[in-house]
Image (cartoon, rainbow, N blue to C red; front, top):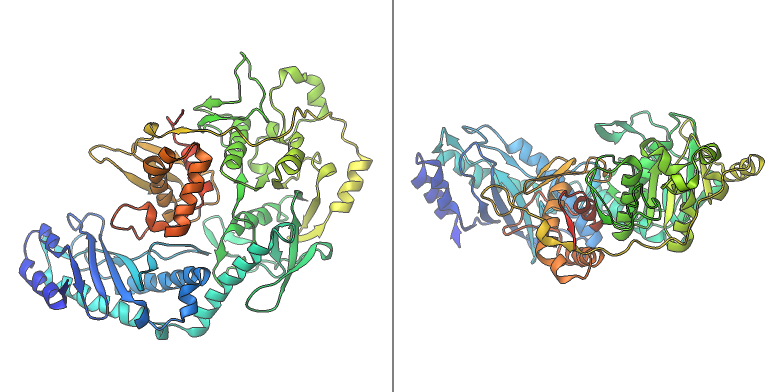
Length: 567
């Protein structure tokens, strides 16, 4: 391993040469307090910045052993450091020539605490993955400016922003304790017979659609007394709040009174949140999925027959294929695909659902005979999802009362205040009986397992055998294909979208070949990511941009890949 003096000598030697001279840096350097590795060196100053890794022995940093050994606290600690390092990189970055010269950046975070590849504890070391814009004038190496970046700025980054003593002890503890508390709350849900918990005092409204921070004058949440439960947490007193029971829950209320705001908070309850977000103590199981209509998406061989019977022309729906799904068939496909991938809680909002998929009233049943209507509405299957499969549903319904008669819990929202409407809803259902006959045929079972033909997944693009990119949180670019994820609402970070692309490639190369069906392949991938971390997805060297995702998210992308073949 070369040392700091060797690095300086190399930079002096290549000073003024063509930019490709930076390739001579491709090795490990022992810099004293840290090791420096160049994983990928940019081709010119106008290309994406170079990838480097800093490696520091954990023993030098002074963090408590329990914070490093405990998986939950370690994830929170890595997230805490990634945020601090990201801000420090912004301060250290300065223009040092052409293109991206002088850029120093890593990958911080938003409101959610996520498992990131930017900062990783491994092999008794802390690794920090950075992107550096190596300095150039035109396309000529600026060796002295590079020395200032690599020797001085990185040293300052390590000395001032990595050791425990450099961080506010109270802020660090609050961050780690908060994540551990959230995880403890989530783990108690099943034993308590719950599928969601919203703590009293939680702040659910966000500033606006493009700003996920809490609304400045938002009204704190208060549970109806009849739905209050108490959950324990490792740090602090037990928390009281609203517990939604497993089964069927309906959220009702007037327009703009907070129904969808509550549902969106539950959708994000799969994540832990930073202190001050307002949703730190709003939790749902990791197998919670937001379902919506998605007109125009492809569907590949999934069984949607529980919701859509034989189509005109005798077209079967037990292995439904289309490149242009309707609102109702897309929503049926979304549910069935999610169940195949392990979903246990479904969230639906009438505003983003297909009306003919959700309800069909008595008048329409009388007008259009049953043998002319292939759709079995969700209202006729939601009880079977609960009773036959143990799958819970939480839905927002403001325009139809068809779900009231069999709801286990009804939450009313009135000016952002929740009240228990279950008893009144039951009375309303009795006073105004539903005259529509249900269209239930057979029991509800999980969709038939599918086996994916991995050869139909082509990651190549031009001369590149594997090309994986992303468009923010909206799309994965897998080879020549663009996978639209704009309607998959639980992706919150661009690093997740990129990780999904690499997870698809990992599925293609390994798990689809070794597993008997897609569900088994996803389970195998999930275990691998749990055991080895998000780094297992990336090619060597590791990519600091990646953020861990659920198998459900990977399945969602795979199911939207056009040209996919079911073998």
